[in-house]
Length: 407
Image (tube, rainbow, N blue to C red):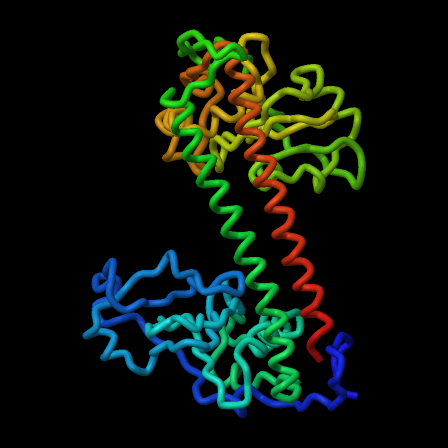
C-alpha cells in the first residue's frame, strides 16, 4: 500500500500521488525592487529575502521593508498568510516555511518561491514534506544550471508528493504544528536567557552590580592589569599534524566555537608527548580562539588529554585570578574591545598575536567576589545549555517523525 510507516489510528486509505503543479494556484517568485537596495526602509511593506526563510520558520525579526508604491508595482510577488515559501537559489536552497496566519501582506525577492495551494491541500502538511529527507532529495535532484545551483518553477511544479485525505492531512499538520510551537517556545526561552546573561554581564563587569560577602559587607575595589601579568599565554602547534583514526584528540577553532569536543581528529601519542613538553593543556585552563574567529573562550572543566592548533590560545590557570571568572570576563564588552583594537584585521584570516593578547587589560575584584561572579554566570550558562539540549532533542524528534510520516 502507498502509505507511510507511521500513521495515526483511524486512517487506512492509500495516499494519492500528486505533482505540486496539480495542487497549486501559484508557483512563482519576485524580483529585486526597481531601485535595488536603495528603496529598502525601516518600515512599510515587508520584503522577504532568502535569509528570512530559515529552520522551517519565517524570521520576521530581520526583515527589510519597501514603500507601498513599490509593493503595488510588484503584485506578482505578493505573499499571503499560509503561503509556502521555498528558497530556490544559493546556499540556502531547499529551506522552506509557512507564512503565519497573522501575516497581512508582503513581497519576496527572486530567490524565494511562493507556493500557494488550492483548496483541499494544507500548507502545514506540504511544507513539512518539503523539509523532510524525501523532500530535500527532490530539491537536490531537480536543481538546474551548470553548477546545479538553482530550481526553476517548472522543476518545483514537477515535484511529486503522496497526499492523504484532507482529514488525515489535518491530523498530521496539527501534530507537527504543535511540535513547531514547542520548538518556538524553547528557542524564545534560549534567546531570553542569552539576552539576560548579556545584560547581567554588562552590569557586573561595569561594576554597576556588585556582590557582597557572606556577612553582607562590601568587597574591596577592583583592580585592572594586563592579562599577561595574571596568566601565561601560549599558542598551539604551528605544524599541521598527521591525523589518524584514533589516538589523542586534537582541538582547533571549530571545537571552541561549536562547543563540541567529542567529535575530533586524532594524533599519535608520540606527537602529543612532544607537544606536551612545550605546553600542557589541563583542567582549569582556558582555550580562546585567536585566528579567524577571535575571542571565543572555553573553560576546560574536564580531565583533558589533548593537543591544540596554533589558531587557539591557551590561558594557563593561575593563583592570581580565577580561571572560571576570567573565561566569563573574556566574553565581556570590555575585553572584546581590547581584543578588537589589537586584532590584525587586514590579515586573512584575521588574527591576534600572542603578545597582543597578553597586553589586553582585565578588570577583576578580589578572589572571593570572582568566585561569586563566576558561579552566578555559570548557573545561567547551565540553564542555557539545558534549554539548548531540550531544543535539539525536540528538533531531532521532529526529524525522526518526518522520515516516517511521509511516503
